Image (cartoon, one colour):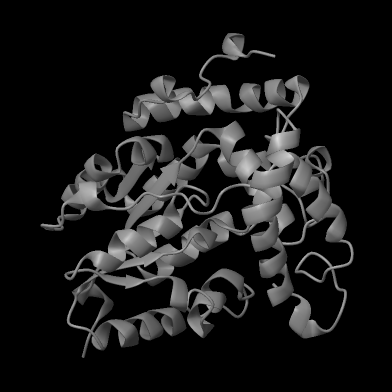
Length: 322
């Protein structure tokens, strides 16, 4: 009978907006010796149980047995579970981050962990855009400043990479945690994937230079996001309770609205009218964000040998520009 110790397991936990979906589609899926348990399983019974079950109801064996059942149906024993929600839901203060990390350790004590980080201001803008595209109605400054008892909102500790990295290193061991930057992956995907595979001890004769890095999911302009944010007041989503229960996730209409805005309105109208279309964070907010993360980034650079200074991460408060 297959045991979890018979499986060499890797867990790619995120971060979101660091090409995780691209990795699932163009990297992990293309390696014959690797079994990916990713997108089609993330809302399965065991996936939801892992991230959402109440602490009093959580059953590690349910998760382990479901995963082993999937592995048993294949010939591979080298497995990657990839789902950025394993770091918690960023739009709900990522309050499950520590709980899920501990549950992963309970279920898969010998696993190895992969995650990519991204310069914080850039990632905040991307996460906020995603929040609006999924139905959010708060303005950016409100979204960043919501406190208890609001569940919706963004907690900056989510992007304190040194705290998150230290948590996973403490649980799984420093040598079992692979950390790299999204910027490096984006700049030289073939070199970075080769480096990752060496760490995973995966042999692949695929020419990584042939991997398509076309970015089809172009971010909406701030003007279009503003329009969509207002529209969200009347379109059901997981952030409001309009309509029946079946509309509390993503109604299909939202997909078509976003697609139309993304492919026609944004490129042919909005971006030709407005010279500046990127999401704006005022200088005072930027200064506060930079101050919070400068020390963490310095620690990440020194402890994990990451080239953060060369890739635009703020390491010293005096480098902040208005």
